[in-house]
Image 1 (spheres, rainbow, N blue to C red):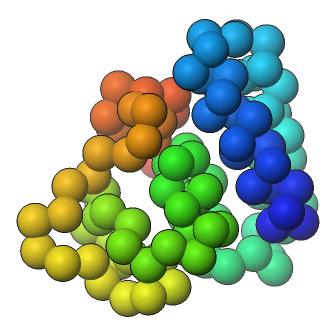
Image 2: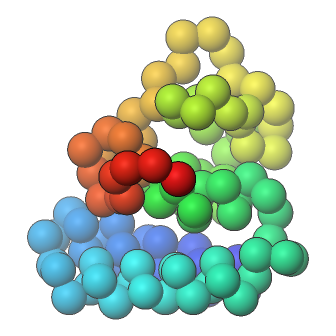
Length: 108
């Protein structure tokens, strides 16, 4: 399932870059479905990124990166442990929670 999630994330980010609303909507529906079906088997960090619509961070995580920036939640980095001091919460292309990109607003 992680392969399909990564493919969907890449397509979503490309759709955002191209301002393609149809692709954005379709990929977000797919990602929500993958999350609903895989919540119990996916890595908790990946679940966190998908729940918070931190899609660029999810791609980084699936790519094995260990220096994923800490966001406003103060969470830890990907599989490699905590990030260094001063790491910002800005994600590629403005996608993620709380930084003006695609995402939910309001309380969760």
